[in-house]
Length: 419
Ligand SMILES: Cc1ncc(COP(=O)(O)O)c(C=O)c1O
Image 1: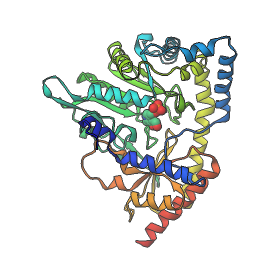
Image 2 (image 1 turned 45 degrees about the horizontal axis):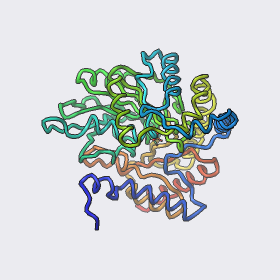
Image 3 (image 1 turned 120 degrees about the vertical axis):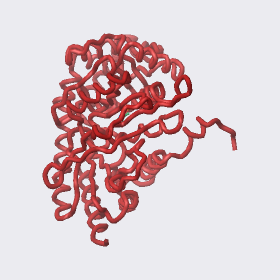
Image 4 (image 1 turned 180 degrees about the vertical axis):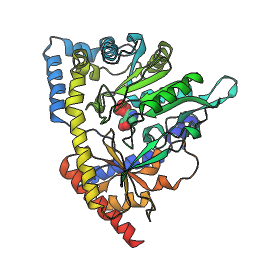
């Protein structure tokens, strides 16, 4: 057995999520017939992919441009032309007072969270420890294991608003929020993975006021937000200010494989992110920027997101919700109001089996979902709700989603009946 550091032990340990991801991946490899409603892969939307293909063909046909792109490292901050185009786009679209010095790229936004959480959380001078606060759990599964040290996160239960018979929505419970010296940053995903929640403008404004008053950043994970990929079905005002850090990504637009994350922040933060890039990976990859720069420059990325990507997913959400309403009729179930992302978060109160058991039963029938209890990083107290929810990805082809949802309904009914 090799001897490794505490960091080595922590990062390489088999985490629940690591195991789950392995499980999902292996199930896919072992059987072609798996109905994949787990994972976070975006759909392959032909109309969107046509743009990327055209962009690639242009690159190949443009003299020695392809060789230039693949043959040079970008600066640690990321590709200059792309950064300039992003800053201009956000300034023109939202009036944000930003320029190229407020933008850095990372290898996927996942690595931005690794960098930011360990900059604003962890051990500080004098030995004090600070944490990242998730004001509303459930939150994104991918945050769980990025801490270099232990106990990097703290989270709060939400308030639950019931909207209609089978729809609910989480809200930040501001009575539970206490920004002590122990909090180094606040973070929310908006729209939220796994729930499809979109924090309201007033919730975001209040969190921003709190973070400014305490001189800590508010990190807004906009992987599904505006202006791209715009997988958001309600009106929501995008916010950026000197103390906010907005993280964006090209992944959910349809380019997860290029690993392109975008951080919008004050110059001090951008400089730190760039330094970490230099140390950890020399530079962020260039391929995503080569494919997308013209789309950003022309603003087409916004129309594509708004006119093609958003309706594509909204239609799928409506269909999946409709099917669940039909097939679960008579049962006690609640779906989080689908306001964005491509997930449905379904809550089965008093479910006689745990969501882990439901996951196993569904897996045995060839349907993969993600049991909800993985989405509560930092929430210390046991809360039954954690074991009563599942996340369903509805991005796949219609036949797959329809067949998968049917089996989910069957297994849930069976579990309630057997009790
Ligand atoms: C909320 C959220 N944030 C960040 C990410 C990370 O995406 P990427 O590293 O591909 O940019 C994901 C991916 O699933 C996500 O769902």
